[in-house]
Length: 224
Image (cartoon, rainbow, N blue to C red; front, top):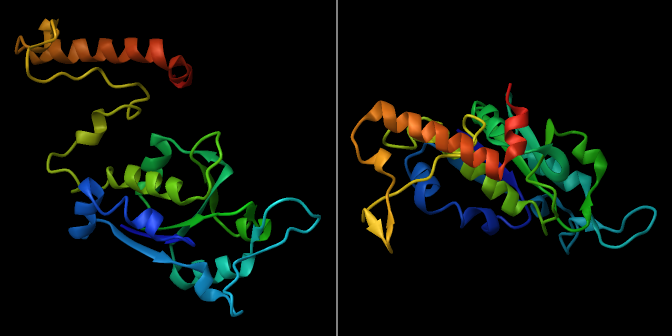
């Protein structure tokens, strides 16, 4: 899969995604990650990518043309352009699965007070990480890429690892345990050490439902 990120600060996305699972996926060519900087498409000596807002107000607004040219330089037939901003569709595991099927994504990171709406209107969709404000779209881009990469074939040595994680089935995961069997007087649930795989799966399903009911009851309301 190819993902290009249009950003004024490529290092804010590149470095967090250079290690661990995503870093190995990049090394093996499963994920091809590129960056394009809108400043490279400006024509003044200061490489200005922003200007004062029409109508007044605080902050500066990112210019439409440098962003448009940056996206155009990497866009090809079949590319899907996503603007990362607070007014977008909420990001979810379901959305990550849908985006992981795309051959080429272009993620656009806003910055400053906002982005000229005329550019946003040229994108295929808007995506929001949540109901909060970030300094820029770069942390959101890193999170979206991390989530999508985990869903790509070949990323995990054992297939199906991501299928049982939280939100994959609309529920939270069951709790996990490892050695020792007793830690600070707390024991591993006996259901996990009996060796009966059918009973283990039944226990995990019940625990998953219970955790979701206690911690995220809103998820249950979304299930059919």
